[in-house]
Image 1 (spheres, chains in turn blue, orange):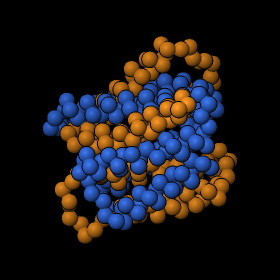
Image 2 (cartoon, chains in turn yellow, blue):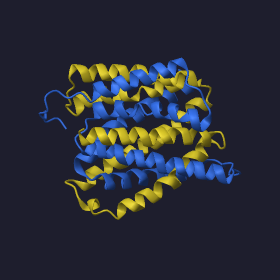
Image 3 (cartoon, rainbow over the protein chains, first blue to last red):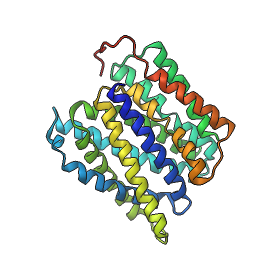
Length: 139
Length: 147
């Protein structure tokens, strides 16, 4: 199994577990407080990473760091706008599927901008993934 | 356009772009450094939230634990997602693939939250597994030079 696939599966497991924990936590507090405490969980992980010697590895560390930082900003602000959508009258049955389609946007931008190519089976996989995501988000 | 729709579309746009920025980050730097910068971004966001409005902090110890655990689990997933990109994964493949994580959430919710899997979710699980196989389908080895 290629390494990227193995790491992707690990990601699915970790995020899947996060999904359950998050469901339970959400019942107990406001989403914004959840976002703040979420950050508290992230910090020790980042601190452990500072111990790694891979921190000094890289070609253009400023640019790479900027992209990683922007990823965090977009992810975190996206979490906030997601909750704002729900608290400004948006129904979950509509908001969740709409926002759940974000990978499609990634694909549509990565293909031209990152010059990635997909074979037909992979393209079919994306279509299947989109349907699967819609099925989960309307449940 | 109603405000909630604007927020929903903004969310779609923000999250959609992260797939690309993750890939671009790991083209230059390590997984560990990526996570450090990623985490650093959450600090100002948390700061703005704390300053913008009062929050109800009257939550139980269990709630504290779960929220922080959530951060750790999500962070671990972010770390491994950076690793997927760093190790040759394409944004157009990895992002849709890891977005299938609700499969695991739904499955774990059965024993842990005593939920039941609906027919829709069951179909979703089947399609997600098929999607995962299809997304990881590589024609005869060769790198196509695009990662």
